[in-house]
Image (cartoon, rainbow, N blue to C red; front, side, top):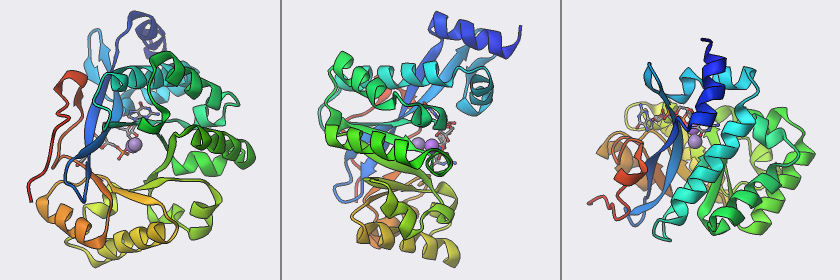
Length: 251
Ligand code: G
Ligand code: G
Ligand code: MN
Ligand code: NA
């Protein structure tokens, strides 16, 4: 059987699951939210990560239905959590480029009862640049008016030009793991992290450091002024029932 056929069956058979990774508030050291990551419980291959099936989902035209399922499931799960926990959902370029994106998000919020202020949508920078900027801007502005946050996900230095950040209504940027992980050992990484934070601060955009794996990295990022941090130091993505909503990181 081809993976494409298996993916179509997986949608019907409910073989997808969301795992959640904690995001820590760097100031309070307490959990501020989680990011959702999709997993596929393949009938014979075990648990598959998105890199193993997202390509096929895309070529099979399944990114939109899968994306809608992910959004709705994440909102449904989050609606049952303590109200201080925000939920970040990754959005694909295909979803962002579709004209009905705002309606899909609104529908998920209304049907699950999740407050819009608790939802963050993480958009890949490539998707923003490649698409129809006017249509995307409209959708982003509508979502922001509703109270949803827009997050620029993979902010490597290539996309962090002030003009780009200012051209879209981002509430947050996520600083890439590749530079975060070098912030205590490499001058180029330390400089790149510091300049991303300074630029975001100047534009009233919050910052999240991804891929934080050590205490030293976390303390260095806090000293540089990062607002939020995420990574294996705080926890891996885990099933909904395993998330610790009272997590705090001791000083
Ligand atoms: O934890 P993990 O291996 O699942 O994540 C790998 C990549 O897949 C990440 O870059 C992440 O952004 C992407 N990804 C994970 N979950 C989702 C999802 O629900 N939707 C989309 N569009 N991408 C996801
Ligand atoms: O591209 P993006 O950074 O969104 O990818 C998220 C992927 O990185 C997921 O597969 C997630 O499980 C993984 N991840 C999350 N935190 C860490 C970390 O601290 N270190 C490493 N190496 N990977 C991480
Ligand atoms: Mn993400
Ligand atoms: Na990601």
